[in-house]
Length: 249
Length: 287
Image 1 (cartoon, rainbow over the protein chains, first blue to last red):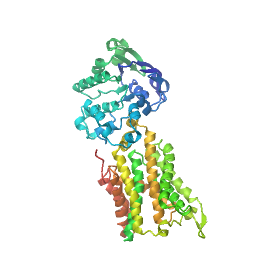
Image 2 (image 1 turned 90 degrees about the horizontal axis):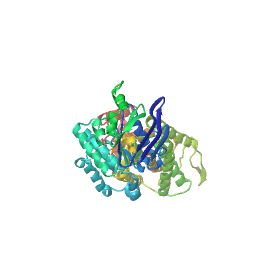
Image 3 (image 1 turned 90 degrees about the vertical axis):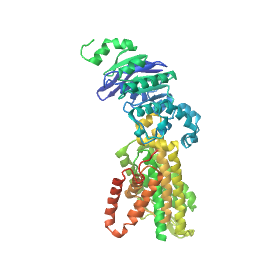
Image 4 (image 1 turned 45 degrees about the horizontal axis):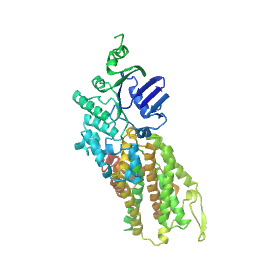
């Protein structure tokens, strides 16, 4: 579904991502882990088009999308959440989901007038489902900035889902969560996969990564040092070395 | 009575100017180009009624179109830059427009006299209202029909998905892009709508003052334009209207008795108002 071929992104002399090859299959939950500064977030930013790659190809469903602007990559079916939550704080919960309905299907089925200048009636049902999914139905008219931290994370996930993505990039969705919230996040991620969404999960919290992913790639200094199933990764000497440092094995 | 009608005309035209900056400011862009679009609209409508003998209403339609066209053309390159760079770029554009009209001559003989813009002398023969026997009160009502229409349009935008998308872009461009919003299309469209509104405002201004010149469209006017939505707040279009009434009606007119001290106090009161209500007279918008 998503293939990165020899992907690099350099910032001046810093090789944030350096010759990365990665293949995510349809229906997978693919984990991307690595120490701080290993290039995980840069990879997400390059896949979604916030930075152009220095070299290499990004192939999504058979098409090289490296030249597409960010909003068109979303229309192709790639949505994301951010490591540091980026909601539209002065818009309501409901409006955050409303402005995010930019999928190819929505564009094809809504007339120009209804889409841009019509009222909220036509889309109420669909947004209602997203609110239900994220447990925010009772907060629909609250400003996003006034939500609690965990609610903001849920809203951001729902906002990504409003674009009906085929591939969802989650950039450290469990950061700052307690273990009960991580449990809820986990079941939400599994529910998304059941609905047919492929997921690339960038995460620090091993409790989550090891529990939900089918396959994991480990980055260090912008390069992939290991790839395999969660069990294989846990036993991998290079991974232990990258995380624990020194000569540990 | 004519004094108040005159003031209401000024407030009406400045409200159009402020609304043109309001919609651009919703997307987070501080534009000092609005006085330029206003000038383009003023000269367009003036030349059409005086030189081509058009009725004012179609001439104002043409003002809206030229204002929109120029704004759209400026929007593409200008909106690639942000923040202070955008302020400088749009300021340069506004000054460019002013200098263009400073050097712009296009006079023809009509009824034994030369009419039309004449560079630094300005364009002094815009007589549509007096020639057609309009009273000051009627002119004022005519202006306010356009103000009400522009306010209704932007009010509707604010309630629609379009207006919500404008605000989303104003809040966080990176997030807006990432949820599939085409930043260029959104920003240029806001600039274009703003240009059309400013163009109509300029066309009305040219006709009620009866003469226009480059100096009327200076940086001071551009500053007023952007000050209105900032002072009024972005909660709704009424903030901009209240800000124009506050600035033009109360500060500029109400303090006239102070003579030369007025300008000093005028600035101080704006600073005070912004300190008392940092997010504008109507404050932040609540969803």
